[in-house]
Each structure stands twice: as C-alpha cells, then as structure tokens.
Length: 222
Image 1 (spheres, rainbow, N blue to C red):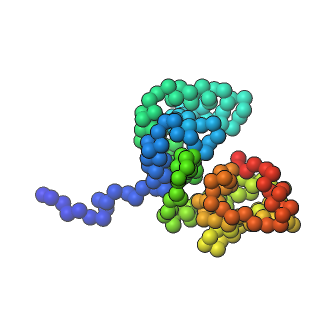
Image 2: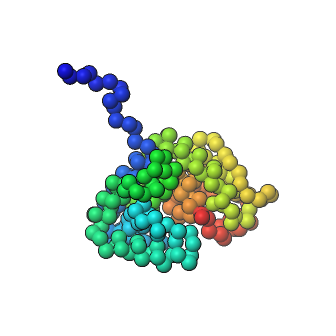
C-alpha cells in the first residue's frame, strides 16, 4: 500500500556549512585551477588542495598552527596538487570521509561555516568583475555571532580600540580604551575584513586620523 507523504519525509534543511560548501565547490569549478585567489600566492588549485588535506589528513592539521610542523602539512597538500583539479574539488564538495573528525555530529557547522564562507569569497573575489552575494539573513546572523566571539582575538594586534558596526545597527567594541576606529558593513563583510581580506571587503573605516594610521599599520586575523 502506498503511504501518503508527510512532513517527516521531507529531507533535512542543509546547514549553512553545507550550503557554503556547495557554494565554494561551485566557485572553484567556475574559476578553474589557475585562477588567482585572495590567499596570497595561491591559485584555486592550491586552495582546493588545502581544503581536501584539511578534512582528509588529520596528520596535516597541526602544521597549520605549529611552524615546526608546517613542512609536513605542505607536503601533504602538495600530494593533492598532483591530482586532477576536478577530482580534488569533488572531494571538497562531497565532504569528509567517515573517519575524519570533521564527520562527527556538529563538527561541520562548528568548523566549516566560517571557513567555507571566507574561502568561497577568496575564490570569487580573487578576479576582477566580482559582485557581492546576497546572503541569507540567517547566515548573516550566524557570521555575526561567530565574529563577536572571535573579535577580540582577531583584532588583538590593533593598537587602538575597534568598534564593529553591523549594517543592522548591532555593535560590538573590542581592544584598547581611548581613540578608536569604527568598521561599518554587513556581517559577512566585517568578517572578511577581520580575516585580513581588507582590500576586498566592503567595509567603511572611520575614526580620527592618528587612530586610522595606527590601525592600518597592522595585519588582522589569526
């Protein structure tokens, strides 16, 4: 007997991490292996190899943080560079294997929502003629939430205080008291700025001349 379809049969709504994974893979495919990205010195193929190694070779992860181990991490990444670009992008699109820590429940959303958003824009904005995406309001809220939690760390090098002013009116202040700069933009744009994509992020930076000079003298991000 045919069973009537119910709401319980509907497929689950993709997480923002899953949506950004698909957007990133599409951007890589559209750009092509040799396309430049906002990751200095890396082409789309370099970036795809990094992403595949990150999810599939846990032994390469520590080298992203510990300089002593960076050589091993780079050797693993170069192994993916030797594979056809389309195959590596497919690995990114299909997600981590079952044995990867990134396959644990909740890990994808926790570790990849911001990662994939930023790298998707690295690919999209690495070439002339790009236009900003219209993001789902829920994704903007998620990116803002993540940015607020990481802002103190990401702007830690700033010698002056920083006020992040979202275009919705939300604000958060971090850093030193006294003279400060105000960064204004959409949540996603502010996040890109915080990750040191300052030249491509659509953010307005205001403040006293001396505070601006000091602020622009440092690099941001992790």
